[in-house]
Length: 377
Image (cartoon, one colour):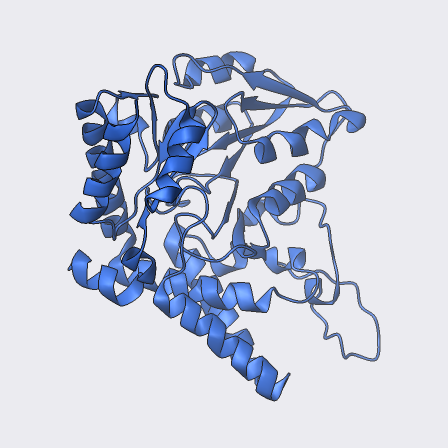
């Protein structure tokens, strides 16, 4: 892969910005923006006339999502956000009063509040603290008992960049009859996910971060043997096997994950999301992962050279694309603000500077990042 050619062809953002904030909201590739503009122009000129062609592209995106995580297309539903997907599982799970959910205290709030919201149904949330930025499997196991029904965990933690070992957690869960829910939004892209190799029960991820899509489009994976066991929420005309145009009502739910897609698609967002996925699949998930992990390691090396401390685990197998750094006496908010002034985009998260590179960042971007980090007092 010629990364410089890819940068020129697909990432206009690089003309102005050294963009290191893909763990927040990524810029759209050129092809995704063009797909979105084409949809807008067609909608303006033709209304519903070409809707079947756009729907066909949505179904191609479903196939591409399935290919990305090695799932079956029948296990894929589209959601507007990771939060929506988490809520569909949390509220649809067959709870019994006295059940509990285990999660980590480092989780993003959207993977905490939906489980907290079950307290009026008699479901307890148990939050396991990390140790020096690491979430230890033995600590999670210690919180699990005979009434634990779900372990809800991120593939990569948003603030520290810690990478959970899903293979180990899936084995530990299934030995104990516990379902594994994965918030994959910060890991899918930098890491390859294979739900056939790793028996995850539920997985959700929005597209606007590492997958380079727009806000408003994401994926929900429900392992096939769970589809009939969850209570479907948000049901509508798209949830059932019969046509909306049928003269008779027939509440027969689709035998696949589309039962959670009750009504109209977020068509513009899904069109752009599909174009972004096509780019990642053309490059290849393994090549994308290798490149991002190498870029993240380059950030770590640069930060250490400039006197910053890299937070989180120092073990490669526990790292993803997020790099969280800190330096005594320096306020991360000030660094992020100064970055915008010099056209370097990064984030401040929970008291640290968070840097998240992607495949197209080049040496010029790293030089500008080094100038920013080196100029901090």
